Length: 186
Image 1 (tube, rainbow, N blue to C red):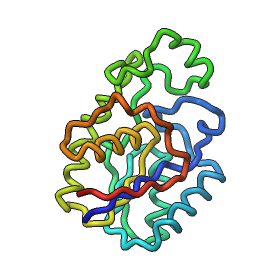
Image 2 (cartoon, rainbow, N blue to C red):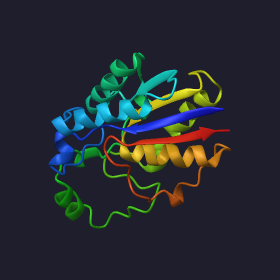
Image 3 (cartoon, rainbow, N blue to C red):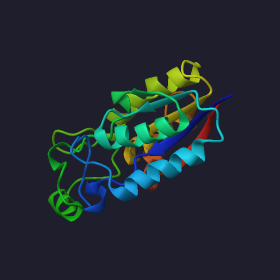
């Protein structure tokens, strides 16, 4: 049986400032975020990690490199693990973005912000990756270092088992920075 360990990147400077990040490559880990990445590595130490795949965005690369160095496992970058694109709202303060998008239906998984992605778009990226992991391509203890919305989508995809996730129920909370969520594929 294959286990997937989903790690959300450590706190970034934009997390601390409550700015929307999306696919921006500007945010970097804070000192707290670096510590969170080290703690995630320690949580993963009991597992014989076979592969670490990471979003190619800087904050996740930094997190994955800390984990990979501590566990002595190389990191592979995969753009399918990127955060949901928030289009022209990337970099906005959270409240400014909420005010500017007052008419946006956040519960609609097919709705995207201008020049951004919908949650269904994210699922289209994540489904093939989950199927590759399910096939055993990366071994049986796989770490994915990613982002809040992408992890929420991945968990929904994994729970579906049949490749047809019900994204309508995805509005659960985003995982905390540096958190590790472990699920088993069947």
